[in-house]
Image (cartoon, rainbow, N blue to C red; front, side, top):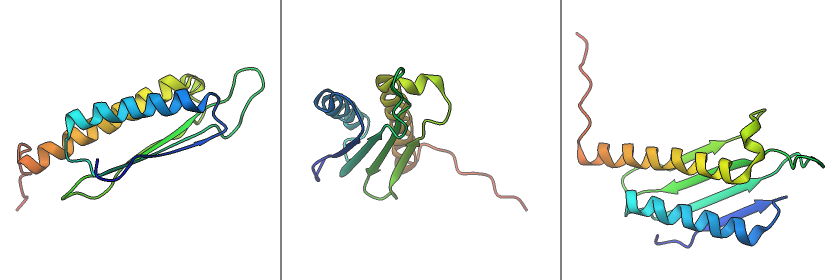
Length: 118
């Protein structure tokens, strides 16, 4: 990445461990698309619950040359798996990987052009 990665954490326990997990996941993304210029990640625990820990919102914004920003937004909602930070990060970065792969295919021209209707 040309620009240092920016990680924003709000109401997240063990922030150093979370930052390490985010950096590791971003390094994996660079293997799928080597021309990522910047990456911003935001992890928020909006409603911290006393017993279960609450749900996590994860937002990833990637910049790639010759493409608009790739924005991945995984709001917690009422999804029970969102109570686990590792699962939230894994799903957000998996979605980012798929979007990067799609972008790379489009830039290479591997995706067929859609047929035009008459």
